[in-house]
Image (tube, rainbow, N blue to C red; front, side, top):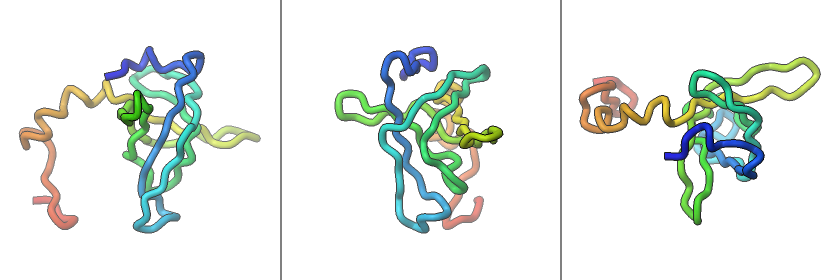
Amino acid sequence: MLEITQLTDADGVSLSQAGYSWDTGTALSGHLGCELVAILQGDTFEHRCDTTRGDSGSPIMIEDDGVFRIVGVDSTFRAQPDAPPVNIAVHASAFAPYFADFADGVIGTAVVAGKAE
């Protein structure tokens, strides 16, 4: 996994995002080549991918030799006076330790056809 400290705009990191936002219905939409703004405390970072309502939880990725790797998930935005909002993502290192237990059903809630079991 790419560590959050390796994500710097000085390295020319180009982010991508894909999700099902409210304004595209059931069509997948995305933003290729969006910008990393800043690395924040608490395993979060600011980005300028074109996200909106419904995109929360969508992957923020980097392309590495033709393979897209998830480095975080979109979470919220921060309004700025006289400037476009800055989006906030949670870095994958914050939730990666829980992947195996989630996949094995040890943690989390199973959802089938929109209803929790």
